[in-house]
Length: 148
Image (cartoon, rainbow, N blue to C red; front, side, top):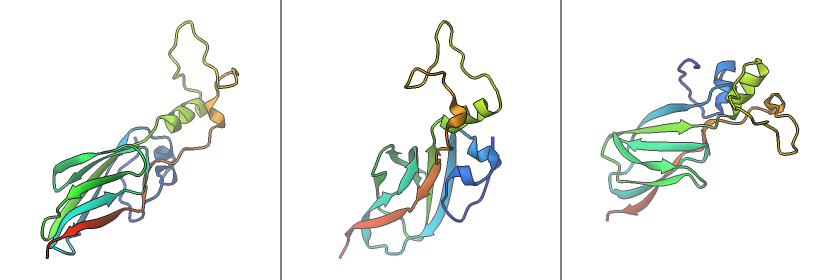
């Protein structure tokens, strides 16, 4: 497991550290922000580029899961003052598999089967480039309706 990190810019986990590059699992992003306009009744959250899926909570309430493009959810009305957005992102296992192969670790536990690539050659993940992982953004909140 990579150590916890505080980030000010959204970037792939593969750029944070060697441990983060090899990580496969979930990480949580948390952001507090002020409501810029209390008259807005409904908002849309666009997460931008997500690798690969994201669960979203607003002020402790589960909003939903974004698992495909356009990674967009209706988040309803923001509360007056401070709001807390929590996003749990889960990546693919490709970088972990690549790391295990690079380190010579056995991870294929199959009996009576040969694991091959798409061209029927011996499977070799050491040739893979690291896959981008995490919340890459940009994240935007768009008002959908304003009370007059």
